Picture 1 (cartoon, rainbow over the protein chains, first blue to last red):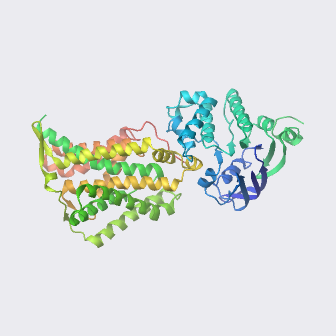
Picture 2: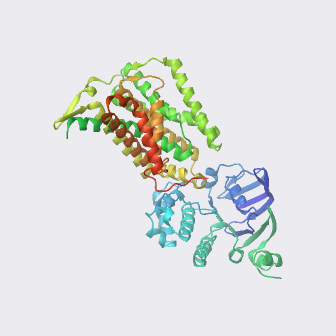
Picture 3: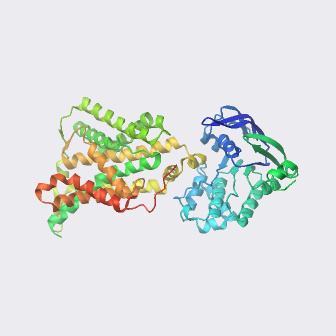
Length: 240
Length: 296
């Protein structure tokens, strides 16, 4: 579904991504793990067209159509089903919860479908329904994360990019979020998940990549990486 | 209610309506692209001269109103796409200088085209009559300005707070990157904000001509500056604040002129800016903004 090869991205003069290559198959949950500053978020920004790579390929194939992510506009990328739930939630604080969800469904036109999708999100996160008419900025961190995920779901993603959905949240909320991610996967949504919480990410990932200093240094199934000594030492906190 | 007080109130409200119309657009544009647009006042001039041209051609009044809205919207979109879009993302100072440049270009083009001569601008006779309301009377022009402004502002609030486009505009104003990730074509949304804001400024030009009776190519400077003051009073970036700031400014001006001895009334603008300084000392982020968030 997603194929990336030889991707080089610069931010200013800094060479952030160096020949990055990876792939995500349809229906799969892939995890990208690595330390702060390894280039994980930059990878996602490049995939959604917010950063332009200097060289390399990134192609998404969905429903028989092929989108060149290195050239297409962000609007076109979003319309073709790649939905990026960005780092730091980035919800619209001054808009209400319901308006945030409506913005998530901005690219859709069928009102009945949008209403149904909204009901699904409310079923997934009942707290959002209670807070529907409140300004999103008044929500707690965990609720804002739920809203950010709910907003992404309103767009009916075919490929969902999740950037650090557990960052800064209470363990209980993290569990809720991971439950939802597992459920989305079961529904057939293809997911690329970025996490610092490598334990949980590797547990649910079909495939995982480890990024260091802008390069993919290891890859494998979630389980095999969880058993890898180098990963255990660097990311899972297990002493050798 | 005494005739004198009523007359001052109507006067202040109609002047405030003009400021509010200009200030709302000023605020919308700042809100969405963080641009202090000093060319915004020149849309008032464009609106005034377009109206004058249409009066001369004998276009019926309701149509003039529609055309002025359309001309203002088009002018705003041209200015945005020609002058401001290419420098989007540049430092704020660059944008600020670009708006000054646009203002100078518009003013000088108008001077070359129309000469600097003052022109008489006459509303039809029925608009200039005075009508009485329970013992007091007011100029119909002022009442029309107040009424139409309320209608336009209501439409604007409906668009901004109840439609998909309005929601997208508010979302873009708050977080451009997130709006792009929702699939919003931000350039089109920004263009729409310029179109709406400029249309309102152009209608203010129509009213300006009708209220003061004379227009010239440099008339945009004062309303542009006053709109900026109104925005700062209300809290820059807030549409409701800009509107209220406009009304406060209009009423305050009329009040100064009414209360001060004759010799001082020529200094009304000085008092307006004094009011601005006082408000900024007491509430630096404006009267109607609870907290200020500066977008990085």
